[in-house]
Structures are given as structure tokens and as C-alpha cells.
Image (cartoon, rainbow, N blue to C red; front, top):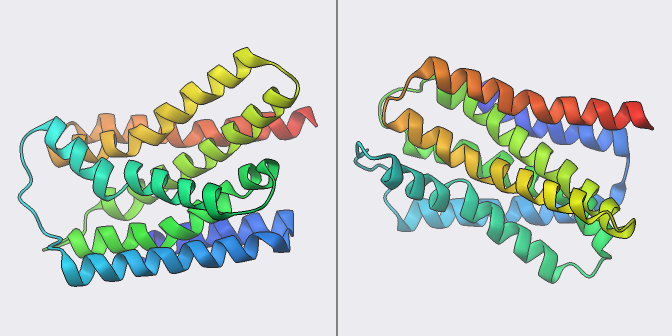
Length: 209
């Protein structure tokens, strides 16, 4: 049951490496995975993972933003941006493997440690797909924004930033909606559309080359 959750992001990272063949990404990838293991170990030994699920969208949104999606995304991105001595262009292109390696370990931990009785389809299948879509879309938008900056197309930079904000926030929105027993059919439909858009943008980008 856990195979899809455990292997989706690692397979995506392997696929990314096979297509790009950029060996320089291996160091930030390994460092990010190590950070994830340290964070998971700290959470395991020093925090209580099971919690009362409140019937409040805002309470759940804040919890998932801080513990699982938005805050970890921001912190790892900032750490990589600050401590990496590479050029900005490389940092932008290394976003996906760096954050992918972190969430490949961190996301399964959050699901497994936070599940008290039994796993549900949302946690095992839709949630990892949403997180992969988040990382993929943000990566595409960062690359597009950097290209737009170099070509001085500010309107496209603003558009990419807005898309990044939406994609960074939505995983916590989806988790919060699921936690308060919102319509699963609607969560599923929005999640599928959310996940297909990065693929569409990627195919469009490939077709233009």
C-alpha cells in the first residue's frame, strides 16, 4: 500500500537525472536528503505526531502549512539559496532535485508518523501526486521567471510569481479540506487538474524548442 507514496518522488528524481545527466545536482540532492533525515529524526524524538483534528479549515491549514508543506518548502529553499555558492541560474535549475530529495523522505514520514489507525487513498496516492506537481510547477515557473528576467519581460515574471504562490499554498489547502471531510470528489477533481497543469506547461515548453 505504501509503495506509491514511497517511490513516486524518488522515481521522478531518477527520471529527471536520466534526462538532464547533470552530475552537479547530486551534491545538493544528497545534502537535501540528509537535512530531511535530520528533520524527521528530530520530529520523531522530540514531538508528538498524532493530534486532534479540529473541524476548522483555518486551524488545519495553518498546521499543514507549518508542519508539512509551505514552511519546509521555504526553509529548504532559503538554506539552499544562502549556502550554495553557485550562480543564480544553477540554483534555479537545481530547485526540483533539491526540494524533490527533501520531500521524497519528509513527505512519507509525515504521512506514516501522522497516521494512527489506517492509511487512506488520499494520503497514499493523491497527496504525493500533489506534492510532485507543486515541485514541478514551481521549478518550471522559476526557470521561466529567470528567463523572463534576463529578457526583461516583467509581466511574465509577475505571472510566474503568482503561479508559484498558488502552487506553494494549495497542498496545505487540499490537506485542510480533506481533514474537515470536505467533498472528496471535489478534492480529487481539483487535485487532478492541479497536477495535470505542470505536465501541460512542460509539454508546451518542449514543443516550443
